[in-house]
Length: 274
Image (tube, rainbow, N blue to C red):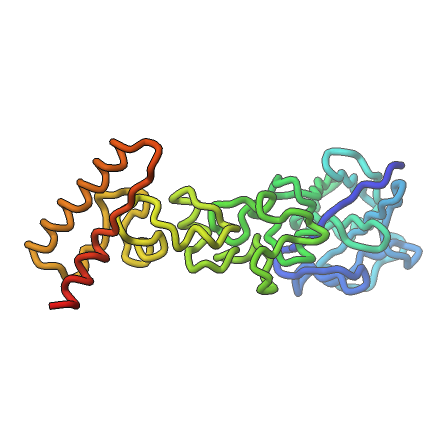
């Protein structure tokens, strides 16, 4: 069977990388035992499926069996026989590859023969769950840091995740990936580059205020008519408007020359010189 590169896990409450330490929750710490005293598991190519239960009593060697079919990503990985003692109890299934847990099911209430569906990419972001869990990404959300950029946009190589500002926080978990003072969410909102820290000091709308100063002031860095009003008097605001309008007109009249009149800065300088 061709080897499939799979990902990390996040289970109800516990992240697991070692099969021997597999805990799904405090209730699901018992590996299901069959009549021969061996763990209930099935091998399918390079995969091993195991069952776990919240049932913690000595098994009756004469107990009858029911069938559990485990499917990984829609593919049947085999049938497991478990004792009828487990009927009316909860079962969780795990799939291992090279002794590493790569996929798991939600808790399933067993009443009889059952099919348990497992997924190796529960949030459908193209990143395998077991690899996501290893680097603390959420396996039930495709935007782990909720910044508007999907994990698969920010991660780069999942085996060597991108850390644009070298702050030891990967971009997919970093609220300010380029450490320029503007959050990734704000950069997404205004169309800036979240991994280019030079755009913080730029004045995108030509109103005399840098992008980061506008964001900090709560104004729109892409709207020349929305700018921090500072503590200007009405006369100074009128002068600012005149200068800003003149700046915009000069820019329109000179297509080959970019003219930027930092109106607000000029007025603040005038105030300080009084």
